[in-house]
Image 1 (cartoon, rainbow, N blue to C red):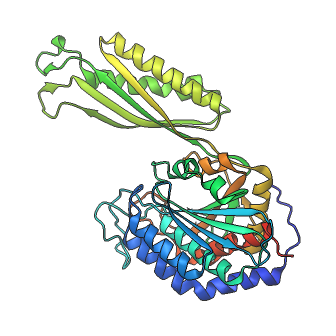
Image 2: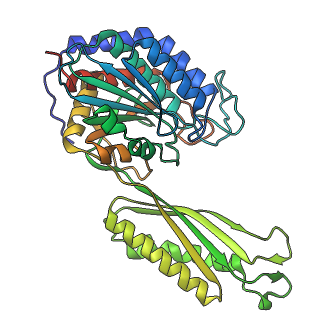
Image 3: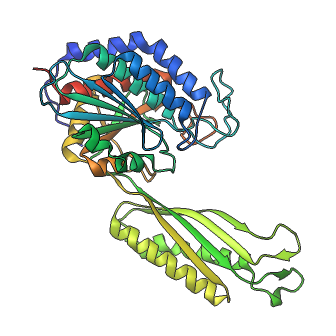
Length: 400
């Protein structure tokens, strides 16, 4: 990426990191509490209440709840208030519908839910940064800390933007962070332009004619039709998408209305995702899926209905703001690597569509991958993450 660093006050950066090292036990306690009480999608009521309570205790100038249903926003004004700019910092709060298998003392107390993506760590780090910024206020302008629900499929970022987040708080630029296993603990990686893929949701409902397993000639077997549709769909990426472009199509579920050994299904449902980095590739994939599903089903005498939902858009880091984010990361950790493209979806894309900004990865070290039952956020990454949030504010809103 060739980051060109601006001169920075190393003493100030070290002071930030030292302060978060002092605060680490307290921030870890917050993180473990959130981890033990995971909440899904927009049902982040306990977490939102905890966040709002702490932001008020820190001395935020304003704390607003209910943005994007259960989102929380804190406003922190710098010492030099004037007509300064406003920088937004975002963390996600929701968990995943996964049964935790870590066996840790702070493991989930909620059956079927766990913080398997580290949103507990993101929330705790932004709380730590908010406390520091309220203490020091060594910036000119306004910092808005944004705690978002429903990143995991619910589009909480979209809901907050549609609720007037950017306009109401006068946000000029916005930044977010995600932990990433495999990157050394506390190190950073980023890239300008498209970073995370558009993640579309796909469902294909197939209707045939059910019957007895001993008389298949009298049926139109929905399971057989579905199997051929799955096979045909593999040709979309391999034979329709330009090989130099990126696309991933996954059929992740196949269900039928038959649960018996001797009943041929009348109905089958396929579910999956389509991930792309360009609108024209996204359009091509949707068109080919619709055409193939319909023609394959028709060939067997069945019918296919395709539901294609454009869910999260491509997350695009603004070029200039990516440079700012990388410079802050290098000031904190000594370097900032260039990240590869990631085909996962990220609904911070909605905020980056509304305002210029950037999204960065902070290393979680050699841990289990996110979205697995044995994953846990690495508490050793907290000082670096908190420092990056604070560094962004003090660099983008320098005090006179």
